Amino acid sequence: MRRFLASVTVGALALGLLSGLAHADSAVTVSDARLRLMPGDLPGAGYLRIHNGRDTTITLVAAHCKAYSKVTMHKSVTKNGMANMEAIQSIAIGPGQDFEFAPGGYHLMLMQRSAPLKVGDTVTIILELAGGDSEPVVFNVVSPAAM
Amino acid sequence: MFHRFDLFVLMALALALSGCTGNDWRTTDVSDVMPPLNFKLTDEHGETVTEKDYPGKATLLFFGYTHCPDVCPTTLARLTSIINQLDQNLRDDIQILFVSVDPARDTPEILASYTNAFGSEVIGLTGDQAQLEDITNRFRITYSYGEPDKNGNYTVTHSGAVLAFDTLGKPAFMVIQSDPDSDVKADIKHLIKAGMDQS
Image 1 (cartoon, each protein chain N blue to C red):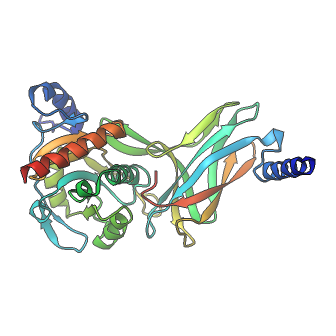
Image 2 (image 1 turned 90 degrees about the vertical axis):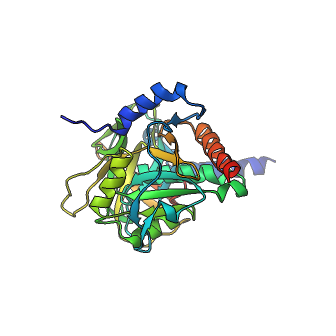
Image 3 (image 1 turned 90 degrees about the horizontal axis):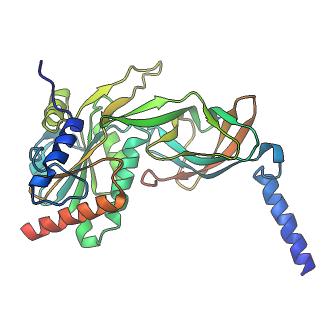
């Protein structure tokens, strides 16, 4: 029993290290990171939820990845029934706060795909924070029909 | 000076009129403010088509463009997900007509691969500017092109609403992004069932 507990602890520690959770000073965690892949050379969209576990505000200023040469932060807005997109320069997330990139709202717009991708693949996108930190996030590639 | 009514104004009008009709849509009733389905456009095979080529099914009409990364796929994903929750016999009696207002980039081939990614009930259409003006004027849809960036990419601002027509092409209701899925599902179900009763 004791041995079992010990291995569970080691396992949990390893998991924590892998996801960056073990670093108290970089406790920015993400969930539901997914990349909606569109056919051909059509732009895709990245969505995720970010939790800022730090005791200071983090500011997301850019994102980049190998699979798409152009990644921009956008927000879909509907004014008087008209849908449009606004480019977003930075997103501040306060200590303990969550921020969501979700369909119909904030999204990472992914353009100029440089490698073939299929549903089920994963893509690492680097989120760049003000101050020089960066957070690599693994996105699951999902179908256009996925929310 | 003549100001064309846009969808937003019509929606307010529709809300004001909605007490006057027998319909009981949970989303916005547009049966009194929209004309019947009528168009001449180009399909995914490059053929000229009209509404008569899509008979016998309830229709959801949505305007957008394939380079739209968020709103258009989100709308189509939402509609197909709602349709997929319906019984099979109902699912076969509805179609989604996705009209691209970006014919410069949306060739029939691109439209075909785009709509195939969502399901067989999604049908892509586009047209030349005169044809697109006809259909968008008819349904008070507005759209405009943004300035191209250095790579020639541009965004298209477009009405985000989905218009629903019965099996005879008569206008029924309009769905906007903030309508809850449960309301949209109930209205789509009602629309298809009403069509079955007519036939």
